[in-house]
Image (cartoon, rainbow, N blue to C red; front, side):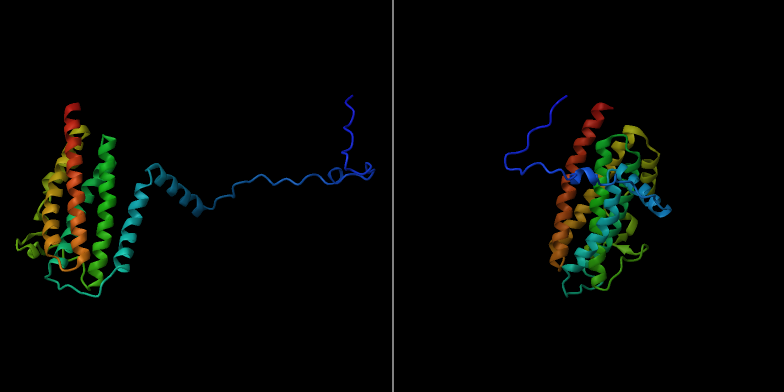
Length: 246
């Protein structure tokens, strides 16, 4: 049998009183348990799990428009451009121009066969929804809406045209072809269509960057033109790689 250790030198004589440890068991924290989920909690949990499986990008889409709108209002200026101004015309037309880019990109976010193409589509959705939030906020600040869908567009550029024929807009037949395509053919077709769409957007943005009255609109137009030029270069590289692999 192992004998007990001697008392420490600075201890008094060993006490015969029962130790605290002997009379009261050491308190332990109860093991954490998950509370039982209610129906609403379970539904919310399933929704969050689904968003996480999508890489969080869908959640970002839900937030960027709201954030952009708040930013647009927080840095608002008192000037109110007229309905026929470059500022209002550009924001209204570019908002609807973005709608088609988002439509194409959502198709590819779901159906792209190449993960890099899918990622590019997701980035376009997030970026352009953010820009739409800012544009809608500025229009609202000035007392303007997004404009009628049957209006004549691009009058602010002195090139009036139906809204669905703005520079870079893809035809209903092209959109149907994109939906019907599959595999690498679909990926390449999307990149080619988005390149054409971006070139039209850059033409509009360059005009607004040079002629809009509000400095926020000029700056936003410059950013759009720069970003879309960079995306065209990226997508051209993707097209070349996919064509070599196909």
